Length: 231
Image 1 (spheres, rainbow, N blue to C red):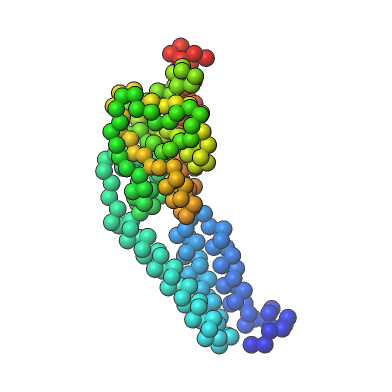
Image 2 (cartoon, rainbow, N blue to C red):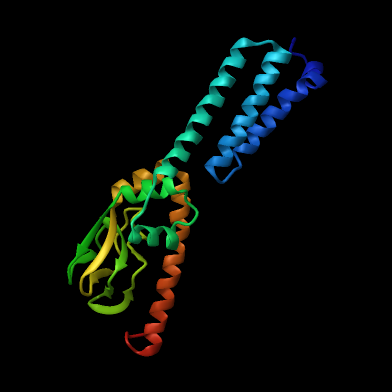
């Protein structure tokens, strides 16, 4: 087909326009699955346009490659989710903070860290120092200390270090274990690398951190109101 203004808006070109419209729409998707599905649809429309209208084997070949790559990625993600299993503690973390992730994505995040039993007095963060790990408290409690004064506590189901671990900034408080504490923790550097390459996990953790910070404020206000910590 000769490229002219008339041909660009002809009936034969309609299929090509639709293919690119679907491709552009795919870029607006918030989940990777829907993005891939729309890319596949756009590529299939592109194959039809390239083979039936343009009779262009080169475009047909590369559009076919685009379909195959995205189908492969969807199948790989699905297979990873089918194989994923969780301990009771891990399932609690996923249910509480990661409900929007697939099983495979949640497994990928959890595998980036490790589980530990920390003893009384262990410091999770130190005020004014960079946060080395993101911690999730599965069992036990920790105290939040600012200028030597206990101002709040972290209960089971709480993240510690979430406000600065992604930026590398200093901790705003010292958090120490008040008795034995079971935690899942991941190194800050490893977490930042993972978030940089997986948008779904990054978005889900952002939402989880916001909820966690809100819950911390509610608990701190309750402690202040009860007189357990200074106002």
